[in-house]
Length: 180
Image (cartoon, one colour):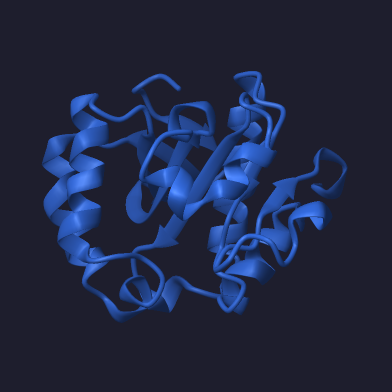
Protein backbone atom coordinates (compact mmCIF):
# COMPACT_ATOMS: atom_id res chain seq x y z
CA UNK A 1 0.00 0.00 0.00
CA UNK A 2 1.28 3.48 -0.64
CA UNK A 3 2.41 5.57 2.30
CA UNK A 4 -0.35 8.11 1.62
CA UNK A 5 -3.70 8.11 3.39
CA UNK A 6 -6.39 6.00 1.73
CA UNK A 7 -9.92 7.09 2.58
CA UNK A 8 -12.81 4.65 2.93
CA UNK A 9 -15.80 6.29 4.63
CA UNK A 10 -14.88 7.82 7.99
CA UNK A 11 -12.05 5.31 8.38
CA UNK A 12 -8.64 5.91 6.86
CA UNK A 13 -5.32 4.10 7.15
CA UNK A 14 -1.95 5.80 7.45
CA UNK A 15 1.35 3.97 7.20
CA UNK A 16 3.17 4.33 10.51
CA UNK A 17 6.47 6.14 10.96
CA UNK A 18 9.00 6.16 13.78
CA UNK A 19 7.28 9.30 15.13
CA UNK A 20 4.17 7.18 15.82
CA UNK A 21 5.91 4.67 18.10
CA UNK A 22 5.40 6.61 21.38
CA UNK A 23 1.62 6.73 20.87
CA UNK A 24 1.49 3.06 19.90
CA UNK A 25 3.56 2.27 22.98
CA UNK A 26 1.00 4.05 25.18
CA UNK A 27 -1.75 1.89 23.69
CA UNK A 28 0.17 -1.37 24.07
CA UNK A 29 0.39 -1.09 27.87
CA UNK A 30 -3.40 -0.93 28.26
CA UNK A 31 -5.11 -4.03 29.67
CA UNK A 32 -7.15 -4.81 26.53
CA UNK A 33 -3.88 -4.96 24.56
CA UNK A 34 -1.87 -6.82 27.20
CA UNK A 35 -4.48 -9.56 27.34
CA UNK A 36 -3.96 -10.56 23.68
CA UNK A 37 -0.63 -9.11 22.55
CA UNK A 38 2.84 -9.86 23.87
CA UNK A 39 5.12 -7.75 26.01
CA UNK A 40 4.69 -4.09 24.94
CA UNK A 41 8.42 -3.43 24.56
CA UNK A 42 8.91 -6.56 22.43
CA UNK A 43 5.85 -5.77 20.28
CA UNK A 44 6.98 -2.18 19.84
CA UNK A 45 10.38 -3.49 18.76
CA UNK A 46 8.69 -5.59 16.08
CA UNK A 47 6.83 -2.54 14.79
CA UNK A 48 10.07 -0.53 14.80
CA UNK A 49 11.64 -3.25 12.61
CA UNK A 50 8.67 -3.01 10.23
CA UNK A 51 9.04 0.75 9.94
CA UNK A 52 12.79 0.45 9.38
CA UNK A 53 12.26 -2.18 6.66
CA UNK A 54 13.83 -5.11 8.51
CA UNK A 55 10.44 -6.87 8.44
CA UNK A 56 8.05 -6.88 5.47
CA UNK A 57 4.96 -6.50 7.67
CA UNK A 58 3.16 -3.24 6.90
CA UNK A 59 2.04 -1.29 10.02
CA UNK A 60 -0.78 1.26 9.81
CA UNK A 61 -2.77 3.48 12.10
CA UNK A 62 -6.52 3.18 11.82
CA UNK A 63 -7.79 6.76 11.73
CA UNK A 64 -11.39 7.50 12.64
CA UNK A 65 -12.35 10.96 11.41
CA UNK A 66 -8.64 11.68 11.09
CA UNK A 67 -7.79 10.71 14.69
CA UNK A 68 -5.70 7.61 15.51
CA UNK A 69 -8.17 5.00 16.77
CA UNK A 70 -6.25 1.77 16.37
CA UNK A 71 -3.48 -0.25 14.82
CA UNK A 72 -3.66 -2.66 11.88
CA UNK A 73 -0.93 -4.59 10.10
CA UNK A 74 -0.63 -6.79 7.03
CA UNK A 75 1.92 -9.59 6.98
CA UNK A 76 2.86 -12.10 4.29
CA UNK A 77 2.71 -15.85 4.89
CA UNK A 78 5.67 -16.48 2.55
CA UNK A 79 7.91 -14.11 4.51
CA UNK A 80 7.06 -15.81 7.81
CA UNK A 81 7.86 -19.40 6.85
CA UNK A 82 11.01 -19.15 8.96
CA UNK A 83 11.96 -19.73 12.58
CA UNK A 84 10.82 -18.90 15.18
CA UNK A 85 7.45 -18.37 13.46
CA UNK A 86 7.22 -21.91 12.05
CA UNK A 87 7.72 -23.46 15.47
CA UNK A 88 5.11 -21.13 16.97
CA UNK A 89 2.65 -21.41 14.05
CA UNK A 90 3.29 -24.53 11.94
CA UNK A 91 -0.23 -24.13 10.53
CA UNK A 92 1.18 -21.46 8.19
CA UNK A 93 2.54 -24.30 6.04
CA UNK A 94 -1.08 -25.29 5.31
CA UNK A 95 -1.86 -21.92 3.69
CA UNK A 96 -0.98 -20.68 0.20
CA UNK A 97 2.36 -18.88 0.16
CA UNK A 98 0.67 -15.87 -1.44
CA UNK A 99 -1.73 -15.47 1.49
CA UNK A 100 -1.55 -12.44 3.75
CA UNK A 101 -2.52 -12.08 7.38
CA UNK A 102 -4.01 -9.15 9.24
CA UNK A 103 -3.78 -8.19 12.92
CA UNK A 104 -5.46 -5.26 14.62
CA UNK A 105 -6.41 -3.68 17.90
CA UNK A 106 -8.27 -0.53 18.79
CA UNK A 107 -6.48 2.19 20.72
CA UNK A 108 -8.87 2.43 23.65
CA UNK A 109 -11.05 -0.21 25.27
CA UNK A 110 -13.96 2.23 25.03
CA UNK A 111 -13.92 1.70 21.26
CA UNK A 112 -14.24 -2.08 21.54
CA UNK A 113 -17.62 -3.68 20.69
CA UNK A 114 -18.87 -0.58 18.87
CA UNK A 115 -18.38 -1.85 15.30
CA UNK A 116 -15.25 0.22 14.65
CA UNK A 117 -12.95 -2.80 14.41
CA UNK A 118 -15.27 -4.67 12.03
CA UNK A 119 -15.68 -1.61 9.81
CA UNK A 120 -11.94 -0.92 9.78
CA UNK A 121 -11.22 -4.55 8.96
CA UNK A 122 -13.78 -4.62 6.12
CA UNK A 123 -12.26 -1.48 4.62
CA UNK A 124 -8.69 -2.71 5.04
CA UNK A 125 -9.55 -6.03 3.41
CA UNK A 126 -11.16 -4.15 0.50
CA UNK A 127 -7.92 -2.25 0.02
CA UNK A 128 -5.90 -5.48 0.17
CA UNK A 129 -8.17 -7.02 -2.45
CA UNK A 130 -7.61 -3.95 -4.66
CA UNK A 131 -3.90 -4.72 -4.38
CA UNK A 132 -4.59 -8.23 -5.68
CA UNK A 133 -4.54 -10.27 -2.47
CA UNK A 134 -6.98 -13.15 -2.76
CA UNK A 135 -6.34 -15.18 0.42
CA UNK A 136 -6.57 -13.01 3.55
CA UNK A 137 -6.48 -14.58 7.00
CA UNK A 138 -6.67 -13.47 10.60
CA UNK A 139 -5.65 -15.61 13.57
CA UNK A 140 -7.27 -14.56 16.86
CA UNK A 141 -7.03 -16.51 20.06
CA UNK A 142 -10.30 -18.51 20.09
CA UNK A 143 -10.86 -17.33 23.67
CA UNK A 144 -11.03 -13.73 22.42
CA UNK A 145 -14.76 -13.91 21.74
CA UNK A 146 -15.14 -10.17 21.03
CA UNK A 147 -12.49 -10.35 18.32
CA UNK A 148 -13.95 -13.50 16.78
CA UNK A 149 -17.40 -11.83 16.62
CA UNK A 150 -15.92 -8.68 15.06
CA UNK A 151 -13.97 -10.66 12.49
CA UNK A 152 -17.06 -12.70 11.62
CA UNK A 153 -18.99 -9.45 11.05
CA UNK A 154 -16.18 -8.36 8.71
CA UNK A 155 -16.61 -11.51 6.57
CA UNK A 156 -14.10 -13.94 8.09
CA UNK A 157 -14.96 -17.59 8.74
CA UNK A 158 -12.95 -20.32 10.47
CA UNK A 159 -10.86 -22.48 8.14
CA UNK A 160 -12.55 -25.82 8.84
CA UNK A 161 -9.60 -28.03 7.94
CA UNK A 162 -7.40 -26.23 10.48
CA UNK A 163 -9.85 -26.07 13.38
CA UNK A 164 -8.44 -27.70 16.51
CA UNK A 165 -4.96 -28.00 14.95
CA UNK A 166 -3.55 -24.53 15.54
CA UNK A 167 -3.00 -24.22 19.27
CA UNK A 168 -4.06 -20.84 20.59
CA UNK A 169 -5.02 -19.49 17.16
CA UNK A 170 -8.32 -19.71 15.34
CA UNK A 171 -7.44 -19.38 11.67
CA UNK A 172 -10.14 -17.43 9.86
CA UNK A 173 -10.25 -16.63 6.14
CA UNK A 174 -12.01 -13.69 4.57
CA UNK A 175 -14.78 -14.70 2.23
CA UNK A 176 -15.68 -12.10 -0.43
CA UNK A 177 -19.32 -13.10 -0.61
CA UNK A 178 -19.91 -12.56 3.13
CA UNK A 179 -19.30 -8.81 3.13
CA UNK A 180 -21.76 -6.12 2.20
